[in-house]
Length: 313
Image 1 (cartoon, helix red, strand yellow):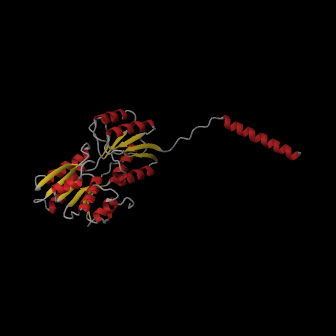
Image 2 (cartoon, rainbow, N blue to C red; image 1 turned 180 degrees about the horizontal axis):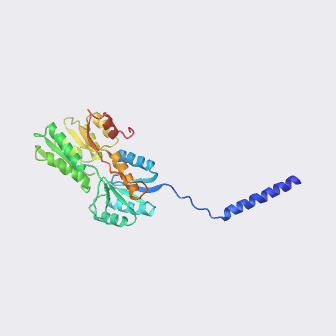
Image 3 (tube, rainbow, N blue to C red; image 1 turned 45 degrees about the vertical axis):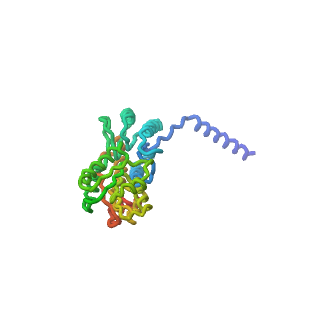
């Protein structure tokens, strides 16, 4: 009987403790993470592998909850516009974007800046409202590739330039700098707009170039694959950037060389700028986005391995 009374008293105490706990409002636990969204202009993650590594490393170092979004169609300004609106509605505290040149997108960004910071990464648009821009050295990269190709000899050679993403100012800077070094010195400069409808095999067979230059990494890989398939071993393929496939093409010399910028640093510095803008970390002196001319002979130097292979840090 005594045992039953003790159990009853114990049960009453537990009941009142639970009632008291449930009677008081529980404050929601505030996240320690900062929500930052990243919107690229690419439709494939293969083209931004090093950039993603840099963004993720910075997010890890700075306690950021990062949302990285690629597009369903490359360079779609309309999709970027919708994504900006979606990410703001989802609670993003800042947005990092590689913007496409487009008046509607420009207007959307200018409106969004009134709500949260917008950081342009790797490309920008002409607007006085945009204060935070992290850029590579696209003009210098274009000139450097032009110099390297020129030294190899171009006086009696035809060059096929595959033009793409010309609604991106950074790509235009590469192209114009490259042309300034090569256009009047080569035997012929054939400028071909490249898009999904272009039959590259047919273009190569019709133009019979000695050199092909691609302005973007995905097109560089496509060019290497096409030249390999056509067994045109005499054609030298050059370009800018890299995907996960590019190192193997360089090793086999299907790609003669490519200019690779330090996308890891580009991603890291862009995320850091976003956190500085939100006053979450102290501001530091802005870093530099360096680059390198990479071919089979120098691809395994310590510096170039860091550019080619994201896991080597």
